[in-house]
Amino acid sequence: VRYRAALAASGVDAVLLSLGPDLTYLTGYEAIPLERLTMLVVPVTGEAVFVVPALEAPRVQPGDLRLEVWHEPADPVAIVAGLLGDAGVVAIGDQTWSSFLLGLQERLPGRRWLPGSGLMSELRMRKQPAEIEALRAAGAAVDRVLARIPSEVRFSGRSEAEVARDVIDLTVGEGHDQALFWIVASGPNSASPHHEPGHRRIEVGDLVVIDFGGRKDGYCSDTTRTFSVGEPSAEQRDVHEIVRRAQAAGRAAVLPGVTAESVDRAARSVIEEAGYGEYFIHRTGHGIGLEGHEHPYIIEGNRQVLEPGMTFSIEPGVYLPGRFGVRIEDIVLVTTEGVEELNRAERGLVVVE
Ligand code: ZN
Ligand code: ZN
Ligand code: ZN
Image (cartoon, rainbow, N blue to C red; front, side, top):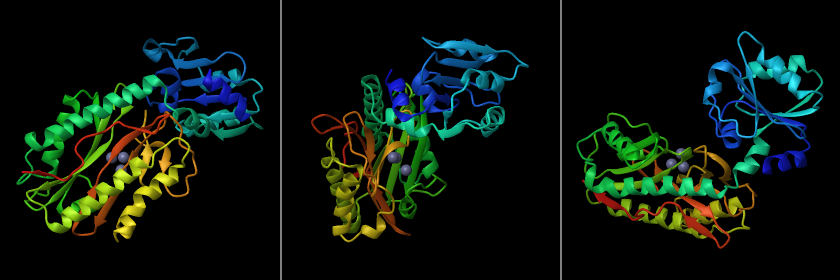
């Protein structure tokens, strides 16, 4: 119903969704990304039809959608074209194979084609209660992983890849359906925000950035802490404290009615005032939900006004090339009163062995 209203307001006559989370959002179904066309056809008025290949039909729970099962060797593009009738403006999901779009354009010349993402992100950005519940559970699960790391994961003398393996096991062990990513960046590698864990042996004196997350009941988690292997140097401690204060300032700036960029500014200004502004080389955060990165992006220039139900990361960092880096990341939820933290693990610099 929300979707139809958004559609009518946007001036689009029909929306087509094939692969990816936009389809999952509306149908609960995850299409297999193969060459056989799966497509939800939603006209602004009239019946929504879900076109699915016969061999995948048993996986679909159509709910109140009419299922249109196609059998090989039928041409599913012709079926979708027929369903579109005289719709003049058609929005199509961003993650649709271009071969299908090209086939539709050939059959239906003179239509206007728009990306489906704009419309969908407007909906997906504002989470429904069940989505918030799933994000809370995913956040609590990675918090439990972080709490177990100091006592259960050995760092010094082991490779980043070995520590990453432990992080993956804990992520699944704490109730995720799958681990999605596992950055373990030690020593000088911690100055690379998206470092891929490798064979470097972790030593006493290293800072180790661990940024990881998974998927639980369809929704994503994403959190980062920086650990010190043995006692940190004064400089490591100082930089960590600056990032900790920046991240706290970002969380404190979250309120309904403020802009996304104001949260970026709140976190960034702490790092700039401490003299490390040029070493904070990425945006402050990203939305999270069915996808690990989605709207709203917490970045300079994004005037998107925050509303209750939006969920995103706050993850400032300082990266000193060739030396070390620090990042702290939590997911937050905008509420009517302000903010709810979906990650609450210890944010001080924890010493590990
Ligand atoms: Zn990242
Ligand atoms: Zn992350
Ligand atoms: Zn993130």
